[in-house]
Length: 215
Length: 215
DNA sequence: GGCGGAGCTAAGCGCTTGCTCACCTTCCGG
DNA sequence: CCGGAAGGTGAGCAAGCGCTTAGCTCCGCC
Image (tube, rainbow over all chains, first blue to last red; front, side, top):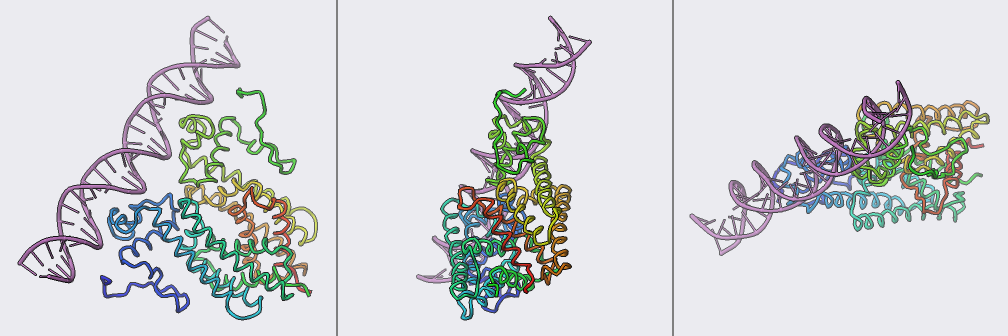
């Protein structure tokens, strides 16, 4: 079915289970357009990006976009939906692994941060272009976000119950932890000094200090 | 000159030294346009806001904007410049007050957070519309941002030198602290459960835990 | 008491935007 | 060998954009 025999996968250095970046977007042309849109939205923002710009980056004519997507907003929605699903999957996987609350929290934070740093263009679109979505699509994504919140809050509650954490304000601290991780997408620079792994480790340590019980 | 005799100041409940929100913008019409622009940019983003929208909110015709500002981008630049100056002033004032590094850090974080929460519409424009500025204007603002970084890094260094803090990675922790504070502008909601003061206190506590030396 | 300039508006210019449509390929089952 | 769907293009439409301009009103000043 795929037009070219050659593989055009960009190796992104994530876990082995991660495959091709946007492999789930099935018609090859639709995938190319979506990848181009992610790059454009991340660089300039949704409203400053034109459909001609997206099509141009994908090496196609502007009209081609409307064969695979009804509107520019639907394209953003597809990106947001898949991106949020991925981020939530990364977070949940870490949270569900066995271990002490401290180990699970460190794992969750470092994984989540690694995703936001490594896929920072996707993450930027997903986290910062929410308001460009239609009200219905926005509501759908906000619901996913509540799930992320629940995952982190769950770990904190477990740690408090086990006497391992000292967290006076669990909802507030959950908010702070997620905010810290998400904002990585804003400032992370590929040409900067830190790798996604280093930032993940640093942040896991900082978050553990935030919640650790004083002995 | 002003049409109505009544004062239209919105009381914003900041420190007494803070006066009218955008008092330094001198022709009254220019101030009204700028206030309208802040509201519009914060709500929809710079690129999704039209000059007609700004003028409409200010109760004027679209052409009036170009009497006081050369372009829409200059309006954004004025907002960014003044906003960053204010935020940096708040941060520096707290950092320069006498006290232990711990006290100064707590004071700096709570003040900075209070500003980002209380003036969250201004902060949102200032922190998240940086890329809409022209390269020259952008560079100017980035320079201001480096000053904020230096202020926080200075406190951390002092605390480490005094043996009060345990911070293995000072630049990285500086980044995290500032990121945490700045991102408040993104999620803070006036109709939410927390007041700016409460968030400031919570965050000051969390940051102190991040850097505290283990006894 | 007429004058000049500052402040503002109605109208609109030139251009770009999201999106459409008539038409052209390519490919595959009968 | 051919008919028709699927996927793509060039040209372009209506609407909206940032910004300009001609002209009006108001007011301090000689």
